[in-house]
Length: 203
Image 1 (cartoon, one colour):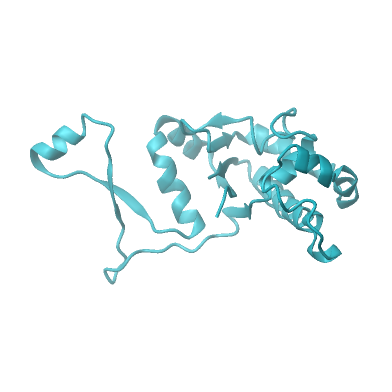
Image 2 (cartoon, rainbow, N blue to C red):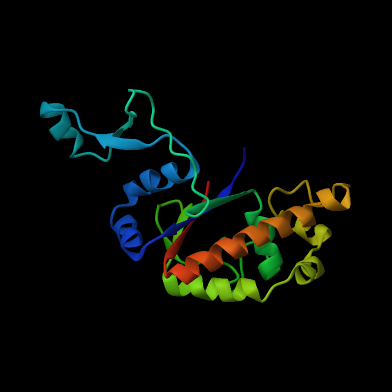
């Protein structure tokens, strides 16, 4: 499956909660991407009391009204998934593999980490507005000018093997990245207009 990227809108209150409670990030993200909804459970009695003294957590799938697993379909107004296009977009935005200035670098750096691994990061509303303004300065023609398959292969831009692979123009990696850019640009503009923040998750 590889490393995929999803973007989720989040209110300032939700971001503050996720920063204060890192364990809540999974519960925040899962319902948005169509996964099973989970909740923490604590055994009763002495075992439950002892578990609260450790970093161990136990989760269970939240059942629906019929007793089955409750599956929440993704809401395109709340989140988008650009699959493996995040690193190629970062290169088109910054010309680098893992560097660049804000807000162009937001796919791989910037914002506040929500977990120890840095997979999920939060952008506050002011950062989302800056990101939206930056994305509006780009055009498909400008992205095409920046596209450099040889350099991207040299820098090992994920997913690596596709950049120099022969393909039809309408099925090329550039066409795919341009489509990803359009989706991101529209989504970030909507989130910025709402005054909300953004969670970028790569996992």
